[in-house]
Structures are given as structure tokens and as C-alpha cells.
Image (cartoon, rainbow, N blue to C red):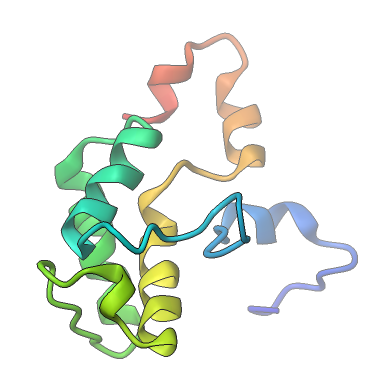
Length: 114
């Protein structure tokens, strides 16, 4: 996966990956707009909204330049578009656990979110 052996090189893979969807744990709220979903992800993970928006835009570009109107309700998107939205939102969240554990030794939690 991405040039790494998933069986033996788990740390680099965790550093470069995020969860997109896990029912009842990491999932989209159909009553929110796309913009509200970005805001929600930023607030949950204490990330500045501007940084979350930038990560979302970069992720959309990396997914082939997908365009999801921010005023659209998530529940009105097709299943495919909801999945693409979930993938685009994944980098808007917190860094992987292994990144946090390496950086947190001797520092506060807020420092790794800066």
C-alpha cells in the first residue's frame, strides 16, 4: 500500500492515513450541509476552521478535482458522492495516533494540533 508493506510497516502507513467512514463512529450527518460537515470535523478535532478548509480543498483536488457544493445537504448527495465527501473530510481531522505519540512526549496536546 503506497509503497509500504502493510504487514511490517504499519507506523508509516498510520502516519499517512485517516479514517473516512465507520458506521456509528466516523460517519456523515445527513442533516448537515457540506460546509457544516467541514466545520463539525474541525470543531471535533480542535483544528482551526481555515486549516480544515484548506485540507478539504487539497483533498478534493487529490481526488481528481471533485466539486461538492458547500450548501448541499449531505443526505441529498448520492451514495458515491457521500463516500467521496467522507474521504475528502478525513484529512480535516486529527493526525494519526502514532504521530501524536511521537510528538506528545514532553509537550501538551495542543502543540501537535498547531
